[in-house]
Each structure stands twice: as C-alpha cells, then as structure tokens.
Length: 464
Image 1 (cartoon, one colour):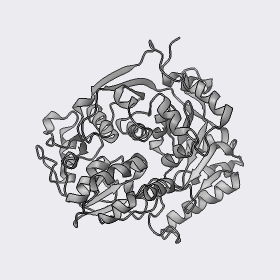
Image 2 (cartoon, rainbow, N blue to C red):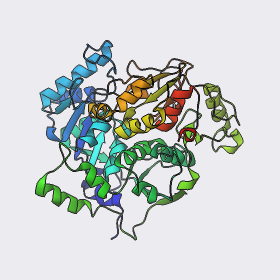
Image 3 (tube, rainbow, N blue to C red):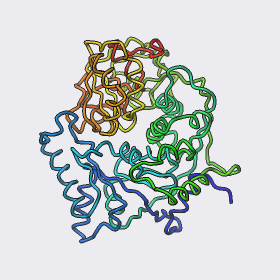
C-alpha cells in the first residue's frame, strides 16, 4: 500500500491502536525547558514514578532566561525558581541539562538540530508549540501539554489521534529578497490561522527542495500558525550534509546505515493526501503582518485589505486594526517602527544573522529604533563572531545580546512597551504577545534590517 512520508514515520511508531480512539505512540526524542516541565516532574514524584528513558530526554533553559548579564543571578523570582527546578529535576532523573551558562545552552528548537539530536524519521515532542520546527528533517514533531510531558517522561509514549494529511507544493523561483519566512507567512495568509487545523503538512516543490536546512526549519516552525499539528519536509542530501558530524549524530557504519534508511523516507508516487494545495513562488514578495494573528499578512508593497475582502468576522477584523491603530487601505510602507527584534526559534540561526548583516553592512542604525539581536544559541553567537558579522553589527551601531527566547514572548525582561511597534522575526503577533499592549509586525530578517536602519517599515529590495 502506498504511503505518504507522514504515514511512514507515524505508522512505524504506533505501539497500539485503540479502536475508535487515539494511537499509543512511541517518542524517540523529548525536549523539555523550564516553563512546561516543573509541574510534570511534580506529577511523577506524587506517583513515585521514574523517567523511563532519561537518555531520550534533553533539557535546556530558554524561555525565562535574560539575554544580558547571564553570569549574574536571575532577578525575577518565578524565572529563577523555574530554572532551578529544571536543573534539579534533570540531575535527579539523570537527564542531560544545558542550563544558563552552559556552552550548549540556547533555544530548544535551535540547539536540538545543531547538536544532531534531531534526525529524519524520528518522533519528537516538547512542551512547546513550535516543536514543529524539527519536521524540517523529515521527523514527525509537535508540541504537547504539561500532562503529556509527564506521560512521555513516565512511559516514553503519548496517546494521539492520527492527523489528516495535507500537501503544500510551491514551485518556481523566489524573487529578490524573498526568504523562507516570507514563504511561510504567505502560505498562512492564504490559508488563515485555522486553514490547516487537523492536518499534518508535507511541504514539497522547487522552493523547499532548494532551501537550506535553516530555511526549512523556519517554514516548519510556522506550520502551527496555520493550525496544523505539524509540518515536515522529506530528507535529502541537504539534510544529511547538515547532520553529518554533529556532536550527537550517528558515526561510522551506524551513520551509513541510517542514511540508507533515511533515503526511503519520502512519499510514494501514488500516495493519497486528504488535501493538496499549490502556490507559485513568483506570487510571493517580502511579507509583513498588519494585524493580531499571523494570518493577517500581506506583501510589503500592498495596502491593508478592506474588511469586506477578508474572510471571517468583520467586527473581529476591525477590532484587530483598532488595536494596531491601523486603517483599511493604508500602505504599510513608511509605518512607524519603535523596536526591531531578530531572533527566536523561527529566525535565530546563523543564516538569519547573515541576512540581517547583508542589509546593514556599511549603514547605521536609526536613532529612533531600539534593536535586540539575539542569537538562538551560543553556537550561533560563536559563528556570528567568527564570520565577522559582529564587526558589521557593531560598526552599524548595534549590539549583540546573549542567547534565549527573548522578545518572542513576554516571559523575560525583553518586553516591548505598551503602544510601541516592533518589527519581529518571531512567530506570533497576538495582542500582548511581546508585552502588554505591544504591537507586533512579523517579518523576515531582511525586512527587520531595513526597518532597523530607516526607522520605518521599508521594502528590503531597496537595499539589494
């Protein structure tokens, strides 16, 4: 029987099928961080349970960590307690722990791939919705809740209904200054934030085949923002080249055998999907959001749509524009920008900082803008320094912060003030996502760079 890539990975991990119910599903890799794991460990302790396979769980601190002066004690008591709980629980249960100050510390969905923990054909979960990032390697990866974190710790399994299958194909050649972030935001704008609800998405076509692994991770990261359970891309030579030699990747004969298997992880020619969509790469330009969900996005040269042209509730749409203090049919070009944030599990990799540097090289930061440049890991931070990107950043008047989730979400000190506008390379622009009353414009590192040197929303194609 012909199978999709998703079917091949999912079905090979089903321990037991429950008639009329969810599958009991084995998990290869489990990532944990300081926010969603403490209560799960309390549950284990209350029942006197051990972690079944501690070697399959990996802990890193990221959400609540400061991005300056990480050598000092964390000031916020709640954050400090959560970070201490992660350290203590990891030590008690024999789990690998990369805490604040550890050379391998960083955002969970950045350090996993860069250390070779992620691999094709794996099942991967974490108490974080953007676990879908790891699907870029041909893995079935998705976020879970705290009770499910406890379940995986205790049994290495989870109970899940099998999602439907969707294929999204994008063929053709991307235009100037169009990045993987723009591709993802474009697809979400076409589907809405609920258009892929109940599905697991496979991305195919020229555009994804030609993407780097960093770009593929950005696309799969944002799958959750159109309602999908996750997204994935079939592994290929780009995947294998990225993983080969990583610290925790397989070595020698084991590596060769794994690659032989990984090459079989692709959708059969006549396999059936529940839904298929096709887009043209030439239709995509640099994107920016104008509202309060990732589906409210448009090409940067366009004007904000009229309510009548938007599917869904008109009153909700107008409420969103009111929160942003925007009006229908206004252009986004020239809009005020107060903050720029480059980082997060969406765009905190070395490729993203290379893109940012390509725009700002030889220019100066706008005086009116506060800019936070936050690498996704210490490895990315090291690459920024070794490649001379730090010199470009410094000469342009910017500073580099330390790794962490930072201004992606209001769980640490990096909060956007109420009423201020932030061009952000992160993944969500909900009301108050980056701080109470903050206003977020999602965009690529190129759009962020253009805003950082002009002080307003600017088409990055002007600088290329």
